[in-house]
Length: 502
Image (cartoon, rainbow, N blue to C red):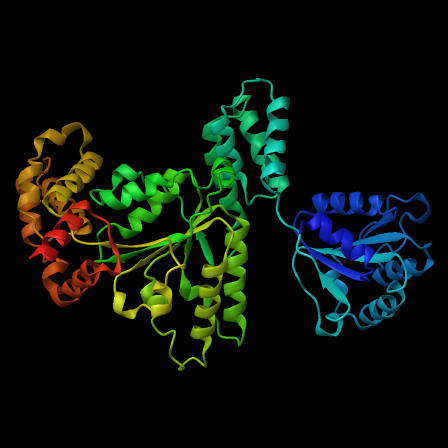
């Protein structure tokens, strides 16, 4: 049921006091006014500074006096809706609470309703039985598209966006309030005179602004391309195939939103890099969740923070929610040492993962598969579980090309990539990068450019993780090749097939 239909039914059913939490005060009031008028109700709007507004007879009544604002409800003839802005601030007052309870008894039998507009839910227990909460959703796709088209029509340059570019702008704008959307579109038009497909970056920056005040999620800007990932061809193909899955065209086709993926494997093999590349390639904001921030000292606060995190992620959807090293975060989910807090937070998170319909794509990474609760690996939590193993020689060539192309793009041919890949068996991508950086230090200290021999010398000083954690890596590889996960590397698939034929 849409918000408009639900509010209309609530008013007609004579629910006395309705509470609507929303930061979009102007838009909410416009919707409420439209519904009230369709029911032949008058509309009275009050705030603490100016009192009642819009009705000349009662203009200024209740100014700086919330109790007087409620008293007007009794004096107005039947058939009215009273919108009280920021009234949640006064609900703890004994007189206000008593007056609202008295009014609730009376309004049950009259076609009059009180609507409290506030930025967040703040209802004392004594009023819980008489107040009904209605969630006011952010603008939907059709409303966003209409707003963008209106801005296009008002631009000085009447250049038309291609249909695909317009769809991308609409998708990227989901999760913004109408006011924020108008501001960012106006900024884009002021800068260029028209809207462009590249204005998606401005929209993502506006989303970043909206979460800067939270202490739970971080907006993680990313410029990482899919091509910046060496190897992992099977994983990259899977991601590229789903690049348009958040578009309106995909919805019309009947495709459900992708749910997410779990990247399990060895440290330093590109799992976190993949999360950043997904965000950049799909033009979606990347939100990084530090699970440790969910846990607080006060009883019930951890669960509240978990719900707040979920609400924030869904408000900014479509987005990518990156949970790094989820194995460490929930390794104690079955422990009772914290009075069950970890279990409750984990349960809330699992339920949301299984039942969510919002376009929040979860990318979780894990190094130690043994610490993952089995419930997390059950089908339906993620679209796919990928194993990211150590790169083979061909993939190491790609990784050396990526890093040397970043550090020495003008001099890439000076390096023997084939020799470097051959001489660094069992090196992860992170270890290859570190060897190059160490070689740069060698060259810089001698006032010259670094060479292939410098990289090999640096690599000889590095003891790869494949040697220091042989048992754990062997367990991970056996776990993956047994069919528990999909292999991120095509060469890995080939090796697994050859092993099964032995």
